[in-house]
Image 1: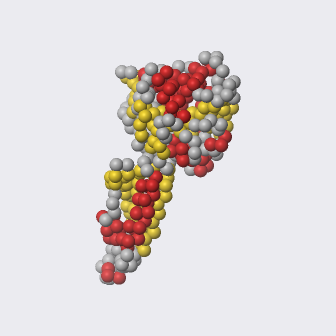
Image 2: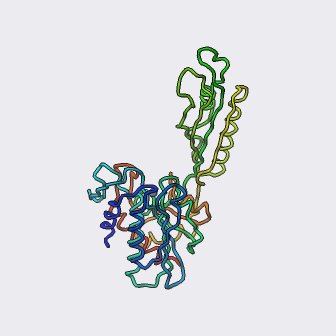
Image 3: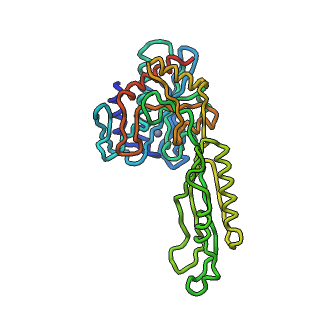
Length: 366
Ligand SMILES: [Zn+2]
């Protein structure tokens, strides 16, 4: 099947994080038709979704094993997509996202496998993971049992940019929150008997180091609230939620410790109490260029006449989870840009050749 036609078919199947049933069923059918054994886990149960991750295997006729991964969900506004061609790109009709993130990755894998099968040369063991809930906190990747795969590394076909861009690192993310507990009192009669949690939280935030912390570390605290529903009571509860990102795990951990210390120090002498929490949502990763997973991708691209561009990514993806679990995983761009917006587009030249890249990786893996 033509890769562009298959893309149009799959983006027109509605999908969202936790609602991947229809596209998972379509993909499982396609994989079985290509000779794969397909299983589905219970990842959906971990976040209220209706679908699990698909794991697909096809035994090899020669030694070696290779694993590819893409995600089946998409960000919001991914229903009723009407894909269309425009000056060498695929775009939506302007009212929805295009969902090339990450349907382009799904299609690259299917197309590469079909090409490899058509070549009639002996193939290594082929392994595929199609995950759920990636756009909602990487839920599928977290729940995925990696011990079922034999491959020594994984290619995650899910990154913006034209073909040749390889993502060998991405920042980690920590979730931070604090709640200040003061004391309620009538705001008119006896405000001096209250402890104003909102005021104390504002002071805490005003003196907190945030924003750009250094070249590879940032933090942001955009969610604030109080327990109050009226203005005539001194505020007894105020909270903040935020995040920090860093390419360096130590810096992330240092900031988490600083945040919690700062919360404690900010309430000292006020009579208020504070509870704070800081936890790593996903760890940063960084693969050396000489690592086999990176080196093979570079060789495959060069064999296609494409110069590899090894870069650090900015967001979180399944590769963050897999690398943290000990499976070296490289992000590969398949041609999309402006993902997560209505202007999302897919470069047809990159996209059609991404299937070729999957075929080359299958052919060249040892
Ligand atoms: Zn994605």
